[in-house]
Length: 134
Length: 204
Image (cartoon, rainbow over all chains, first blue to last red; front, side):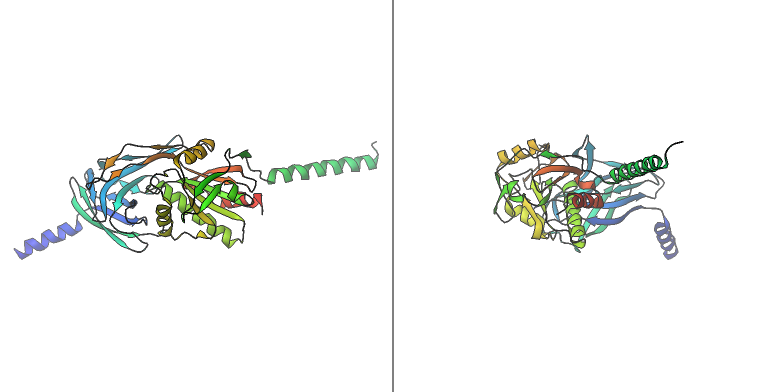
C-alpha cells in the first residue's frame, strides 16, 4: 500500500501541469480597481479552459482583454479562455488581465495577494501575486 | 578655362549648401502647433484647489494626459509613463515642466479620489497635478482636444455597487509655454526618451 502511494505521489509530482508564473498586481486603493498579470503555461498534453479566477481582496474578479480599436482602448470580459497544449498565454498590461473590481482593502507595493484559478480539467490552482509599485 | 577664383566660390557655395542641408535634416521639428481651443476653465486639483485651464500652466511646458481612476489597465500604464518622464527630466535637471492628469470621469473622480489614486502610486506632486471639474467643462476640453471617452454598460457587484468602464483615447499631449499643442503620444505606450527629447526641443 505504501509502495503504491509512493508511486502515485512520484507520478503526480512528475506529471506536466498547468503553470502560472510571474504573477503581479497593480497598486490600488480600497474601493478602486486593479489588475493581475502573469504567464499562463499549459504543460499538459490536452487543451484546457480557464473558467474563473477568485480572490478575497475584491468584490468582483473577472478576466478581461484590452483591445485597441482604431486608437480607442476598450476592455471586454472574457468568459472562458482556451489554452492549447504547450501554449503560453501572457497576461500583460494592455492585453489580457484579471480585473479586481472594488477592492476590499488597499493594495500597496510589496503586499501579497492570494488567487484561485479554476480550470475545466486541471481544477483549482492557488497562486500568490506580489503588488508592484506601478 | 574657368577662373580659379570663380571655381573656389562655386566649391564654397556647394560646401555651404551641403552643411545647411545636413543641419536642417538633423534638427527635429515638432509636428504640431495648434491651439487647445479653450480658455479660463475652472477646474479642481487633488487638493480641491482651483486651477484655471489652461491659463494656470502658461509659461511652463505642460505634459497633459487623460485618465479615469476606475481604469485598471491602460490609465495606470499612462500614469506610470508620466512618472517615468518626470523622473528622467529630474535626472537631466530639466525644470519648468508641469505634469497634469485630467479625469474624463468627473462624476466619480472627485478631488479626494484623485488624491487617493495618486497617493497609492507615490506621485511626486511637486510638479504633478490631477484635474477634475464640472462635467460640461471637462466635455468642452475633451471635444476641443479630440479626446473620446465613452462609458460602457453598467454591471453590478454582489453588494449591488454599479461598475462601468470607458472606451477611451489613450493619449499624452505636449503643450508649450504659450498654450499650444506641439505633439501627441500614445499614453500607455509612450517612448519615454522621445517625449523627453521633444521637451528639450521646446527648451526652457
